[in-house]
Amino acid sequence: NDYEALNDYAIAASRQAYVTYVGPHETTPTLETIQKTVDKGIRALWQVICTRPYATEPYLRLIELYRAIGEREKSVGVAFSLAERPQATPEDVHLAAYLLDEAGYTTESLLLYQQAIERDPQNGRFKMNLANAYRKMGRDAEAMGIYRELFERGSYGKQHHIHQLTED
Image (cartoon, rainbow, N blue to C red; front, side, top):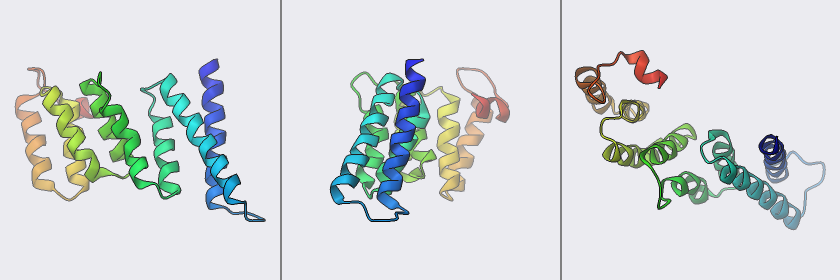
């Protein structure tokens, strides 16, 4: 399968980039070697992302690679690139928020979770993930308000149990 081969290559290239950048090394690589290796890993991961834009792992690997090389803005920008596409759907915006949240950028994920909910106000999974992000941040009152709303109103006119919302 072409995708699997490309994904395997991207995993290997991004691992090599990480090791070249952070070590350990027997001898310190040149800046040119580091830059070429990192660029190769980044290009490979973007190629996988373009091939399968809804697979989360390549995004998370790219976010982590940018973080490892000290490029915080680019790290966060990986997820925002998905949400800011002209044809971005509510699911795209939610996926971008989820990626940020999973990568440890929970504060940055809040805006995107809220935007996804604005675009699809009945989606219980979007609301559940926003509530979970609030809880991670210690904003328990806001989280409980969302949980309560989900239990009282459900989503798409249907009542849910907690396990149904977390399994979507």
